[in-house]
Length: 204
Image (cartoon, rainbow, N blue to C red):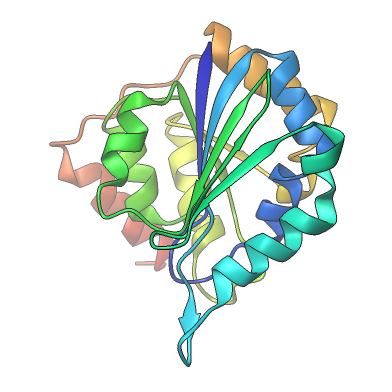
């Protein structure tokens, strides 16, 4: 039994990543490699009292067809905007935001994260295998530079969102689960690492 956390960031909805991970091919790939629980933080973007991320999640989920095709039972908590999808093979728990995302990281075996520095650091400090996915729809946010610096230090992998539901990505996840991919240990107290990454990112 393996638990996967996918965090897409809270402020801007990472629509393309959510579309990939709610696809039939991605969910079937997870089942094939033994993932039995998926936590999906889908975003908390709100504009003019409208929950943009929740609306996007619901539209993508409906269009994906996975509820019918994989016989999911769906429960929604309207107060917290949390969704639970359960079938015989996997449980998916989707939520917009958590002020204690560390609790999800701790109970997960591996993490797929957007390229926010805070999310990356939060994952690495708990020594969880990490795949970073850059939101290429964001302009001038230095996410790609940040991700590349962490990869150079061999702290994580950096993959393209377009490949997330591919067989190649499935193999990467499998290799992470069985421990075939080795990373350098991130030392949280060593502030010089983060400083050097930020310096590289800003061209200092």
